[in-house]
Length: 339
Image 1 (cartoon, rainbow, N blue to C red):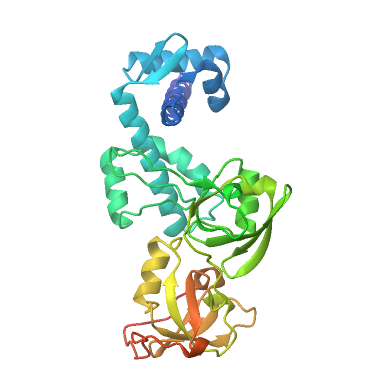
Image 2 (cartoon, one colour):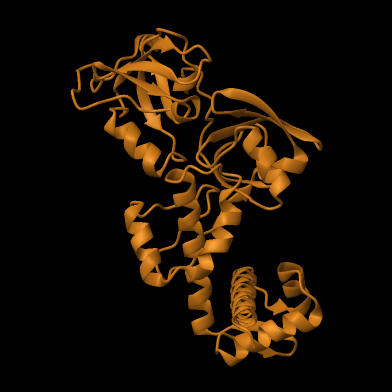
């Protein structure tokens, strides 16, 4: 056997082992999801998830049984304690990777799921712990899914947006990332976890919403993939708006940062002084309108439009309101937030 043939066979074996590991891991995640829904996994449900034929799925299940990760009884499949631990680790690694890819690597949110799917299988528990610590132990991934601590089960994702009645208010807790076409459409509508939303009008075809200081009509085909947590009062507040929408040279003060703003972006905004009560004013428009310069804490910083939308502000003159904590002092440590 030539060296070239030997090398080719070795690469093919490594590829097969990698593919088998990925199929097994994906089967474990599916069985955990079924268990949380109060169901046992079946051959049919695994075929749909793994997109494999009967024989291939049976081979995956046999490998899991031999490894002590799953059992079969009466045509249904369940996780062992060891299999459940592995499945929870995979979910935790996946969601932390999505948070890293969105916040630190700055991949588009529509691209992070597929990349995390490829990387999660190769993350040890120690590596996952280090990643969580480096990110500041975030609580949710970019889609709003809870990031469990080591060994912890994921939390409830919330209720479908379609369950809200007109006049009810909530905050977006989760955007379903599959199918990718619907998720991409939700992102294109400017929806993301952490945004406050109230229903103005509902019909069989669409929901008229008030989201993040703007009106939005969302087709019912998309609304079913949005999940929310209920609030006790209407969230329509005409006095607050995203910093990105503030007219030029209008003085405002910071109300809050969006819960969807995590990782690098949140840390930088806080470092630059975008804390509740701080005065901020748009002072310079770029030729293209993005980024824009803002005066905050005695210095001028530049924010891109998508960064400024994370900052909720109120006009300094709204109802003559002025909080005792309003800050307008300089901060020599602040600098320009690069584009």
